[in-house]
Image (cartoon, rainbow, N blue to C red; front, side, top):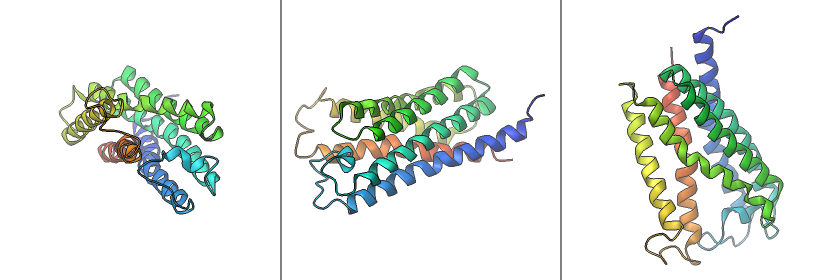
Length: 209
């Protein structure tokens, strides 16, 4: 028994809606955690410290990261299915979906081991999601549609490359330092997480009946 394409499109749209909501949920969790952390220093402290031993209510951030991780993994299914339906590119669909699932697992695991536990660094699995725009572009290259999405994905990827180069001190060493590292992390996080919601929204529109 095969599943009809209209039903698959409906399922993909539902999963992508989770992708639209995930960045908003993550942002709300961070803002609430910050509000509960007296004297949190945005310039010098990392976001992970919102769930660490010095936080007043660390469970807020850690629970938020856990749920956001689960939502990211679910959204990965939507992205993979959307690529399969819109581009007929099964390999790209598996890779894109896998990158999102890995990111979700990393976030989930990091919430179980709050900072500064070394196991918290499982969150680095989420950095693989930086490659998702590239594989989405590869999948979309044969279609004339979704020009806006293609341009957006290219811009996002280039911006993430610039932020990676700067924050890893590969160029202009000293630009990112102990006195402003928090601001750079916030900028990176907004791009890294925010693009998911925009891309999910645009792909949902393309899948509309």
